[in-house]
Image (cartoon, rainbow, N blue to C red; front, side):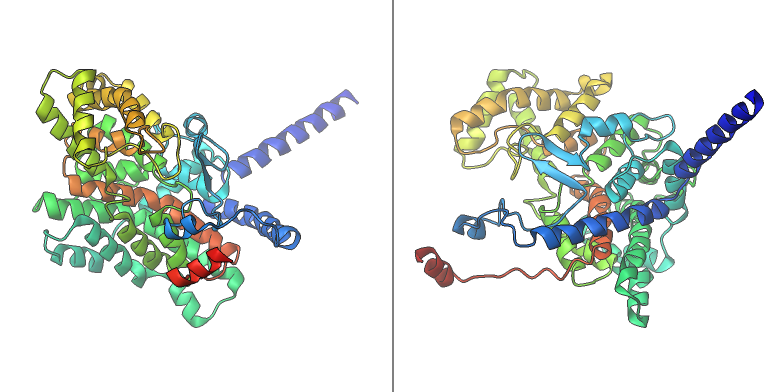
Length: 461
């Protein structure tokens, strides 16, 4: 009797252990296949039960003010709260830092673990993260025709233009486009979109690194993909910084944190809009990259760094709060904005800024860096000056206030290239939500536009 009871417990324990082991080894695609049906049912129920519910008002100022604040887009991976900042499937940045697996020997979030979370809403195991790293590395080499295309471009063409061209040209590889042309069921759209998205994310480091080599370090030999490294580990290595573990860890954190910032920002929205036409992921994301290249979006950290360096040059080594305050007022009185402060949604300090600053505080070389010290002291002075100035809704630092300055400290000082790194990152969110748009059967985006006369007529009614 005792023996049978012990055997029964052993069998139950073994079965439970096996189930956990099988769950921990499921691929990203297998995990996604499990979660899609429940999300499809949730959306169906929402549409049936609450399709006519009113979720907000539309004011004239919304229409003529860049659609700020309009609740008009479905984006499931992240939600940006004005006071709390970004949450990825309910997890804050600090939550993610605690639970998402880092690279072997590292401490920071890596692209693979963030990609897994964004796509499935689940935290991957270490084993699943390593498996995904391997898959991306194996798919990471560029086709010869893409290498030839990039190598043929004049190095005077902006790096972001080259990145967008390279991504668009990769649509020759699109399994979605090929499948759509031969005819597939709508229920299968997401599977081919997933394949294209993973393939594109895998190739971005090699694509971005080749552009960096061609523009800034011509005639330098490019290394091949190391199958044992994570996505950003390979990216850092291809850029020539693989031996700098601190910069590599910073790039891992930077790319993970910039991966998604809900769907209303220009690059994410562009990918969603173009993707709603059933353009393949390569075309949709190339369009997003050209949105990211605009000065009001992805170029912001360059502007911060230029401004910080100009301040550093003017006030010299005697960096005091008073000197910084004087320079801030000089900037504002000249009619310019203070770059790196304020945000279209946030009304408190950006949690991404805080996370990057905390990274800096762990490393003596960054604590002692003149440019990083200037960033810290500026963040202590600027909010009060901006409040007194009275023309900003958010006087606090955003992520751009520090992100480019750390790259500059480590010698990656080619300003025009910074947005390319952002472009490698933003694919994580934009492409995962493109997969979900196909899985949920979201329609072509087609809002209604109005003329000034039509708005005036409506406003007077």
